[in-house]
Length: 215
Picture 1: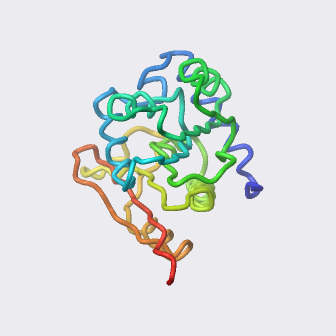
Picture 2: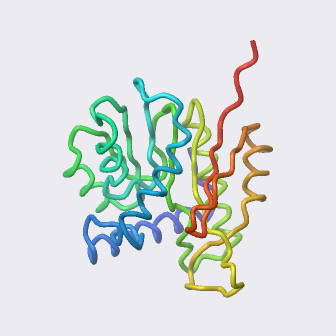
C-alpha cells in the first residue's frame, strides 16, 4: 500500500517520538505515552470486545509498541494459541518487542503485511505532535483503510474526546467527537460500527465489523 503524499514525514515523526518515549521510560505504559497500567489495560479490554471467538484467532496490532497487548493477553489466554502480528513505526519499539516476545511476529512500518481476523490500534491517533489537523486526519483515514483492508472480520480503534470543560488541554493531541469517524467507517467500508464509551477516560472506542457476506 502506498501512503498518500505527506504521510511519509508523519510516519517518520511519529516513529521518532515514540522512540524517544521508549528511551526515557523503557517498556512501560509511559514508554508508549500512557499514564499507567490500569488505564492501558482498560483500553485493551475495550478494543478486544470486538473478538467473538478466541479459537484459532489471528490479530494484527497496529502501533504495537513494545508488545504490551501480548502482556495483557497472556494473563487471560494462551498467547501460543493466538496468531499475533504487531507493527510499529518505531524500529526501536519493534526491537524491544521482538526481544520480549521472540515467538511472535513483528514488523516495522505502518502496515501489518498480512490479513488477520481482527485489527486493533490503541492510542494510535492521539498524539498529533505539530502536524496540522487536516494532515493528521489524512493519516487517520489512511490507517483506517489499512485496518479495513487487512481485517477479515473487523477492526477496533480508539480516540480522545474533546475535554468536557472546553479547554484545549495538552498541546499536540488530537481530540474528536465520534460521529465523523462513525460516518467515515460506515460510508467508506460499508461497516457496522458500535460505539463504546463511558469508562471515565474521556475517550471512545469504535468496534468496526464487516457486514455478513450475502448468501
